Length: 462
Image (cartoon, rainbow, N blue to C red; front, side):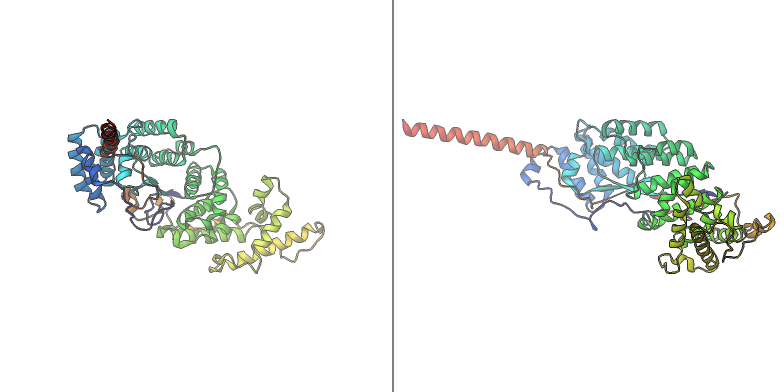
């Protein structure tokens, strides 16, 4: 059994799938100068820090935030923003401290940041295969704090933050993935599967793909090969509509699980559909080709009955479907006119292609009532070859005893959090203290004007 390590894919390969502007977008917060002048000193310093962030001058912004702390030690939005900036620079201990101080539901943490920076968004790695878009508000800051605790190895603190988030907002998939990734880092696959469980499995977006792939990976690493194959099957079927790098992982694991589950024909068929350019470790690309040669030797030496039993038929009968359904799929999927799957044009696979097609045609003929005494147009297959031939030295040059990483690059392991200004949320209607004061002055001014006019009218009438 291949020992596979799913290490972190770079963001360039698995970018966040949420909608966002293509470039930084700065919406006008609509804050009048008189309102800014009437704001507290701490709010003015936060606004200056936000102006620095628009130029990505994080250290200069931190200096203004520190001044704001001196003016108002419990200024939640300033602490929250400082925690984001520390996390973006991977200063995890200061980030955790600042985020703890900055998060408060009662204080509506993040409302003022959203007012000054309406389109600011956070792109957070929540697993080795997925980045998630957040905003610098209470939910986004809390999920970031949980991720920071995870990076620091503080499982109890992380689960405590996520438990509180579930109480407030309900269980969400990004929370499940975050916890599962921490267990994966510890090699606790059983706990990772439990963390990923949800009432209904869906296959709508890339976060669903990540959950399915990770569940299949954990089942495979626990040697539950049938469970792994069943989990990954739908992901492999719909892979053409997904991120090709995630699809390659799912299909690769799917083929491994199929072989271990005693389905070498189906394993070879699915492996032939694997896009090698999306297998990121060159050594694993070599493994795919070597393994396919070995599977080809196995498949070519199966008897008709063993060949049939080692292909999709077992999936269909397990679901109570008729064998005719299987034959229909087999003959249609491998018809000569089928131009959807170009991977069969790779050298060495024409024989398998033809054999699958001819086998399907043969079984279709049997379905028409010629079960007994019919001489097949397909020559009888040789009996299963000896173990020495089937399990010969085709894979001897590949070390199955060592753990092979999916991606050789270390770039993904360094990526944790970044911020930009491509969010698509509407500007906040939250008012600064200066705007509230200005409104109060305006209201009292109208009252004073009314009183003056009333006095003038009374004098004119007297």
